[in-house]
Image 1 (cartoon, rainbow, N blue to C red):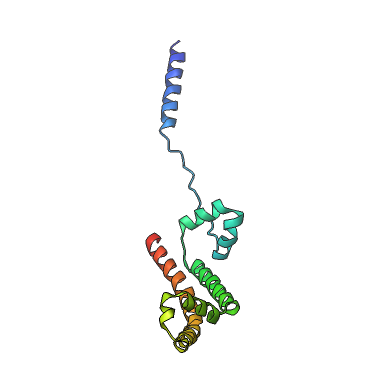
Image 2 (image 1 turned 45 degrees about the vertical axis):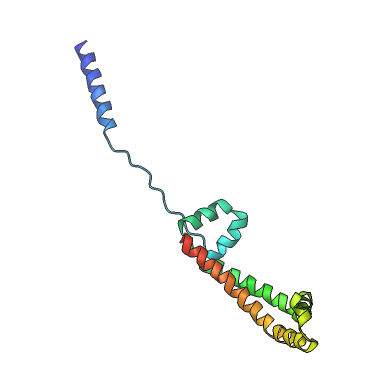
Length: 141
């Protein structure tokens, strides 16, 4: 009986000793970062992994370049298919101030506005999106 009791005590001490041993914890390996171009397609095809990667390492260069590129394309399309002269002429005629102007003054305003409107479209089409991205990125990054 003494041997059974001594074996039981020895088994208990072995169990207690083994519970004190350190168990190696698995270390999570960092996932490979998704390339900026891969993030663009990843938003559509694997959004969860893509957004996790964006949270891990945010970047702003490619999104800014794409926004500027699309803005420039929109302004080019607008300026090539839009008659600024007709639009400005209509707006001047709608204005209550137009009744006070002579036909020559109206024509002068139309000519001047039609001359500068495409340039303003380019400036505002590129500056405003850039400013928005800068303001947004300064808030979040």
